Image 1 (tube, rainbow, N blue to C red):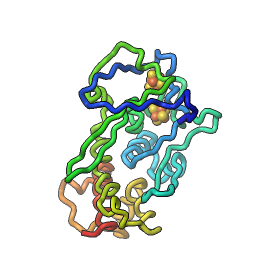
Image 2: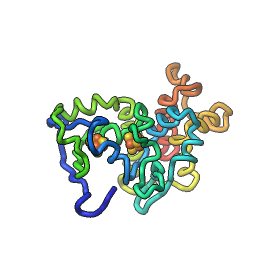
Image 3: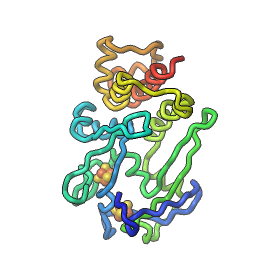
Length: 246
Ligand code: SF4
Ligand code: SF4
């Protein structure tokens, strides 16, 4: 993100029913501007979709497109999409005609200019929304309007939200919140393996090197074959048990 005062985005809390006057299409003068100078964190479901779209393994995707870092104060590593060194920090997937992975673009790209936050309260996911207004974005000058909820629905986020919300059981676990859990090096490796390198995780499960401490239900068996979304949900449970017991 650009950081000087003129290019700083304005953030405005909004509700699901708030009317959003916004539209984005190849005809806008700023087309593709939001795909440059950005810092794009990838969640596991984003990686799952992108590696499938590119027809490569999760290991290849992580090696070629992801920078992993662990920042001060963060319990878990952060995975960021690499940007092109073109002086504008352009997304590696942006082309003159638009996003080359459009149907599998990350959740943050789909929801933009809305940001969705989710928190686990008494076992229920509570959503919060914020509207991000960047000075270069001319989508707000378009005439199309709808509610924030309708806009997000149109961006087909259901699969993303399902997996990202399941991840809250790890990221917002009480032992994370009270600071009593700090993963060791091996747990950090297992975190990256199970969430971000699903193909390798599946291989290790099939070879019996790793296993679930619970029998898989019939509908979960497909995770060991080709159902990546089911495997990711199982991986979250596997890590939950590994990190926090139970
Ligand atoms: S993934 Fe697509 S929509 Fe997202 S920043 Fe890159 S080019 Fe833009
Ligand atoms: S209107 Fe906004 S979201 Fe659309 S291309 Fe322009 S900057 Fe990006």
